[in-house]
Image 1: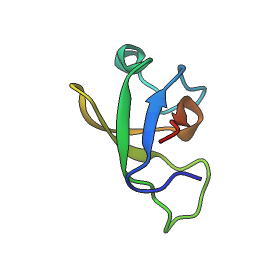
Image 2: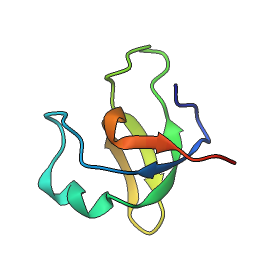
Image 3: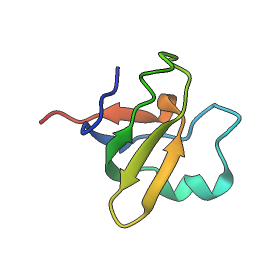
Image 4: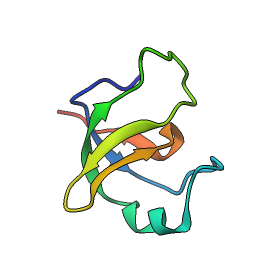
Length: 69
């Protein structure tokens, strides 16, 4: 489960239908979870991630992995 403030990496393209081709450039980017949508409690819900030098985006969770502190 992802939480606000978690440091993450976009480690692969998502299989989710919401993945857009412009998001391919995000693979390998690091960022911080800003809105994990925990109120929905849906593991398939999009999460908001602030990516270093790439802005803030809503991304599917299957392309995100948490980085160790």
